[in-house]
Length: 395
Ligand SMILES: NC(=O)c1ccc[n+]([C@@H]2O[C@H](COP(=O)([O-])OP(=O)(O)OC[C@H]3O[C@@H](n4cnc5c(N)ncnc54)[C@H](O)[C@@H]3O)[C@@H](O)[C@H]2O)c1
Picture 1: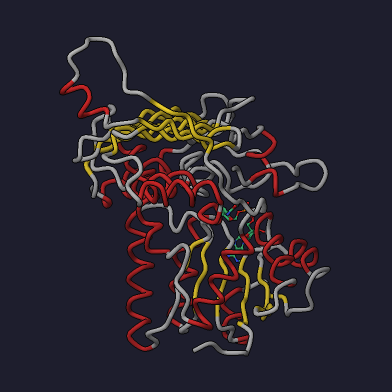
Picture 2 (picture 1 turned 90 degrees about the vertical axis):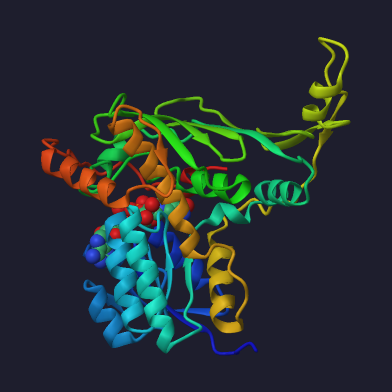
C-alpha cells in the first residue's frame, strides 16, 4: 500500500555530488528536503540557493533535531559506514553513495546495523547510488544474459579507461587519492560502478589476480592504473582494465558466451550471434579452420540519457513509501567493494591470486599499514571555474 505523504530526506555532504542531489531532490514531488549538512559552511551556503531546508554543520545534530525519514550520504568514503550506522540506530532509511564502504569489514558492519535496525522496523530500506544500473544498454545486456541468449559464458572483458582525471581533480579535495582519506584510487572512486555492473551482469568471480600501479601518472599515493584477471568456477574468465590517465580512453565491454559475443562501445550494442554453439562446433566440426556462422545484430535499447541519480532517489523513495523493489540494494554493494579490495590485495602481495570471499581482516590491516607508512603530503587547490558533475559519471 502506498502512502501520499512525501519522504522527508536529509542529505549529508553537499560537495560535488551532494550539491547535485540537493538540486535533484528539490525538483521531486514525493521527496522533500528535511535538512542538509556539511562540515564546510561555504558548501552549505552554496546549497542554500536551491533549498530552504535547515542547514547543519553537524549531521548528528541534524538527524536528532529534524528527525528525517531517510538520509542520503554523499561524503568521503570512510564516513559512509559510521554515518549509515548512526542513521540506522535512529531508525532512518539510508541511501548511500558508492562505494558502500572502503573495505569488506566496514560494509559488513553497515549491513549488520541495517539488519539489527530492521528487528524494530522491518521495512527499513538500505540502498546504494548505483545510478548506472538504470542505463538502458546495461539493462538490455542483463536481460539478454538472463534470457540465455549467450548460453554458457566464457569471457568478459571490460576496458574502461575513459575515467580520465587531471592532477587538478585529485588536488581539489584533501581526502582524495590518499589511503587515509579515500582508501584507494580508481578502483574505489570511479570503478565501483563498473565493478558493480560486472558482477550484476556476469556474477562475482571466485578468484582475482590484480596488477595495480600506485601514483604512476599522477602525484597521488593510490592506484591510477589497474589490470585485473577474474576466474569463475564455471571456467569463465574476466579482464578488467582501467586507469584515470588515458585520453582518449576506451569504454568497451565484451561478453562472450557459447552462442556469440555482445559488444558495447561508443553507445552501440552489437550481438555477434552464432548460428550454433561454438563449444559444440569445436567438438564436432570435421574441418580445421571453419568458424561458426555468425550474424551481426545491432541491438536496440532505450536509454534515458540522464545520469540516473534522480531515478535511484525516486526508486529509493518508492521502496520506502510503496514497498517497491530496489534497483540497487546496498547489501549488493559488498561485491564491488570486495572485488576492488581483492585486486589491491593481490597486487600488494606479489600478484598472488585471491579467492573470494577473501580474508577481509587481512586487507583492512593492510590498509591501516599503508596509512601508517604514508609519507605523502597532500597538496590541495581549488579547481578553476565551477565543475560540471555530468562530465564525471561515465557511460
Ligand atoms: N554516483 C555518482 O555518479 C558519483 C559521482 C561523484 C561522486 N560520487 C560519490 O559521492 C561521494 C562524495 O563525493 P564528492 O565528489 O561529492 O566529494 P566532495 O569532496 O566534493 O564532497 C564531499 C562533501 O562531504 C563533506 N563532508 C566531509 N565530512 C563530513 C561530515 N562529517 N559531515 C558532513 N559533511 C561532510 C565535505 O565538506 C564535502 O563538501 C563519494 O562517495 C563519491 O564516490 C558519486
